[in-house]
Image (cartoon, rainbow, N blue to C red; front, top):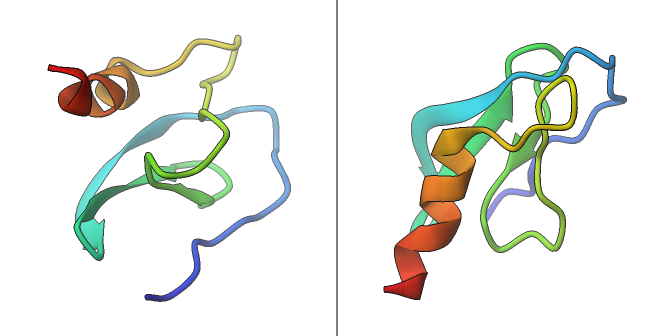
Amino acid sequence: MPSLAAFPCQGRCDWGPTGEHRGTLRLFRCSTCRSEWTKDQAWRPADEGGWVANSVLTELAADSH
């Protein structure tokens, strides 16, 4: 599986789903710096202001039911 893209944060983060998958995991990308995230990562992507996007929270909660 290809590794996730990681670029320096520009402080204007805006994370959302891409409609793509890495393996079986949904891929999320910051629309500003283009870094990528999947829920198996130890960190959580936060938007500008420190908020975790609802789409990310929904992805994280998907396994907890």
